[in-house]
Image (cartoon, rainbow over all chains, first blue to last red; front, side, top):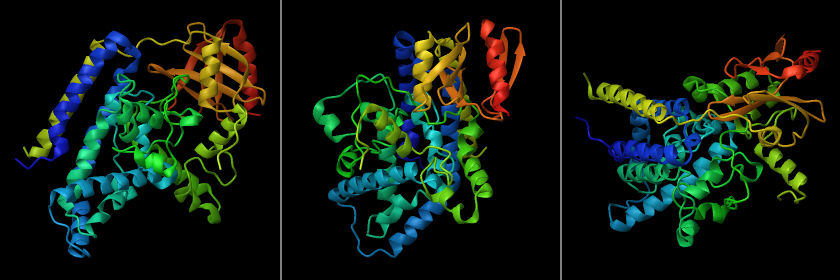
Length: 298
Length: 133
């Protein structure tokens, strides 16, 4: 039997917690789950694991190559684990932020947001095409400064496992000190919301401090009914459509666009068009601020 | 059988079991629009800046058609236990059968929906036909 990683060991707990949340939903809010949506989320999770297994060797080889050309050797001291975990979470923040702000990366990440529900099964709605988007580049560079690739991979896995439990509406708010430092269900609900005030906020993985530090933090408001999903909801439970719709959209846009605008459809924000016919999250937010009588953000 | 194949088969069986459990627990609800206010709220959230000035609600609450002051028409339809919306454009189609109006967006994956709009069906069918002009 091949050696299993932390994520594989966590899967039985993921399933157990999903079942427990379903029982909670049965008693409190049956609309929080939808069987077809759950099936789509879980199928995306299985597909993501399979896609990851197919490409893990290449990502590992790239990390090992960087490690072989490292500028220093950090080793396995206890503090190296802490430093690696914090650095990996910092990298996650920027990878995630780029995943929302650059359409090429968004195409790989969008399926995680494509559910209109927000429950633990949504957490497993992971990318199939992250490798194609080269998102891993954000996470492996610490090998070059001397962190062992195994340490980086382990920290990345723990980061992913941490993010599972925050995909729930069953937990409202946690103690203030915890909400101040850590990413929580409340903070991450904001991230998955499409209400204009919440768009492109709270990119954190484990530590919400990155959002506070880099100006992307938005607390959850009690007076607002959250709508989850993406700005243009899929309206479909088709797994393949969830995975590939944005890539197909990019291909169509690049094909139709004048030559001087083709690259922009890859590197500009999702929703950007050369003729302004669609909305980006910035234009939606600006319109909302105008309607609310708020000054647009600088 | 290689371990990875066993893992894949086991995962598929497991996700089918969990999805069946969601079904057995009757999760998802039979959601319906509670009224015009909810339809307006959902429309405004779906497209920021869309302020409905006219709307027709399906009698069973499974969807609605809404028009804003700029003449844009939005289809709001049930999607599982939620609602999804589209601004209708020239690709949209409408088929009228007495009080029933079948509306499609032209997007295969978004599908189409048949709304019971009562005596408003004919008026809305006519206005949707004009979208193509």
